[in-house]
Image (cartoon, rainbow, N blue to C red; front, side, top):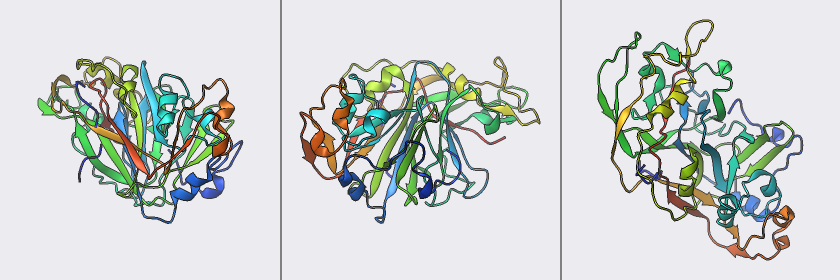
Length: 374
């Protein structure tokens, strides 16, 4: 399968029913009715979520079950979910990042970034192609359970502050993937003794693909629990794909997310200690589900990265047919982004076909892994 996913190198639970989308102060589309019309739920489409950064993928425990994408707690990392918007929807000022450095430039290009520290995404993708237990996760994903000797797994009910956020897919499977660097990996046995030493091209971008989910709607709930927002996805692009981006990357690498900003790339760093954040999500398989001790020899970290792809790995976000708002006014008045398309002061609408905003993301400092359920 061709890789759609580029990081430029130097380096959610239960079925969502439509009747449950509007709760609290929730709303469905808000703003532009054209976006809701364009999204055409009856058309054939594949929703592709590009996963990048420090995340742990936990496959389902049974055929057709849910896949959990866990974002471990770690300092100085941004946890964002990006998707396409028209820009005038009523939810935009409340949901989308709106800072002058990252939020507004993205909105001008038809992209909304949601801070997953403030909002949680409800389970998404049910009704699509079921996920098999024997999934197609590439072997390049560092399996933290096996790397730690096999005695530890992910016990979701036991996770607390170690878990920053999670996204749950109710369907789909792994698609294309991209690796920026090869690391030396030394898995251990149950006693913490190294078994071998292998070069492993760790994955930096993984595409999760869901064909024809029952509802092409993202449902966000505020972390305070006071607000729920339902957001329709844009129409697919010409190739039948709707692309989103889930990123958990160091804050200095936000410049690489779509729409990419010109900047000097940093030199790759051996930051394998970030893998400790993934090991923090593991628990032993006993009755008490104890965490993997902080200084255990079973916390085997990869080391010595070697650049594989200097040109990087591409990621993209599908923006809607009714494009971004030009010349967005300052957010001193957030009401400028609410109401009908004609109510946006000092702006004009761009009519354009569905397109994809693409960029390369630089990251050696965090890579993806997987874990087995305990």
